[in-house]
Image 1 (spheres, rainbow, N blue to C red):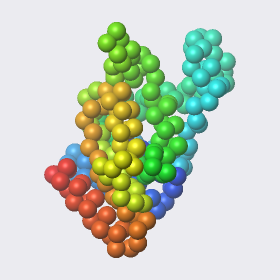
Image 2 (image 1 turned 135 degrees about the vertical axis):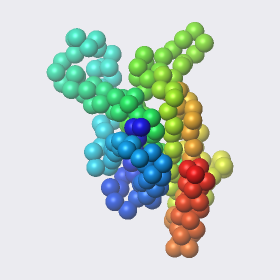
Image 3 (image 1 turned 60 degrees about the vertical axis):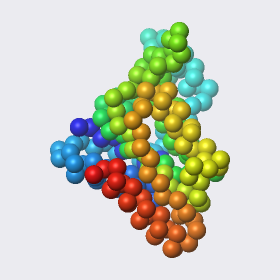
Length: 199
């Protein structure tokens, strides 16, 4: 088994979402001795944003790209290869201003590539990353689960479905900005959710 862990917090240390991702990975590893783990920390090694030069490189045939364009696309290729090789994907996803972090958005922008991780058909888009299990550890300062303020989970569901990732489970750690008692409660509830889904 190959596990891919994506930490998308802007913090390299002390991140609640990374704590969740670490806990999920530990349980998956315990259930699958010998599983290989690739961990990508998007704070320690930020991926470049999708900008005009990148778009130009993507729409330039591979054999006509400049060395600079080829090098830029190679960065995205590396992320795509990690996702394709993974059997289990674990993402630590904090909520920033009601959405995902720019770090996670850049990761999605890198791995969503036509005819590689999805394709368009006469019946609409079809994801090409099927057959993988996805766990997402969500941390929030407030309480947003199942509310109109949660634009994060609908976006993630859309992106996962677009890429063919349909087996997705979320673990929530909410109220992290509401004081020590709320933090302790949130961590205990998250640990209980992990125990429930990873028996």
